[in-house]
Length: 305
Image (tube, rainbow, N blue to C red):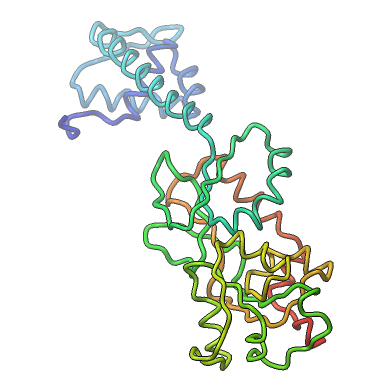
């Protein structure tokens, strides 16, 4: 198609509306523009085509033979366009909202809150795609990805949800009344670490625990890691918001923490228009973070109080 040969869509819409109502004032109201704007668009279209399309009458307008011919074709074309766009819009409205997140984030942060979301927004069908993979976002696929990192992902839009904070914790039953004077004493316990994650290893090295030091390590999937920490199977590191209830109750004790403000969990979407359901979910999830959870970004570790 040679797009350069087509008149402007605005002028075609103005003429089609005028032809439907046979009245410029009613056409202007339907298009939410002024009477003069419709009149000007029609004059411009007539000049472009080199023929008269309408004539003014006492009660409105009449179409010339050329105008009747064009109006019939435009009515069919615009009806087809309306049907096509409506079908896409309707399909998007009923398509489930798909959110991708890691198994740990899904089980520790999302699941305890989802009943509230369902109660508040029963018309939104939600699907959680739980995977450790950084999935690709494509139109009609994943709507929102929750990713851990700096927030700088090429071709994507990100919004910080939870700032990074590595917190070393243990069950109260495991640690008892013991006060750890330094990270090296963590080696007295089994170290529970998330599979495919080196964050705890890097932190230990950062605080002076040599990589060659003897240590007992068990590596687990993220959601199983938290279960192991809660049972007292060993000491582990996680995001404090994931265990806020246990920290508040004292069932888990914070031993060390290291805020990492330059990284964290982000809500990630494609650039451009965002589905209404996705906007609702983003706002709801951000607002669901409690003041106590926000305060856990940085605290005095329990063993130093």
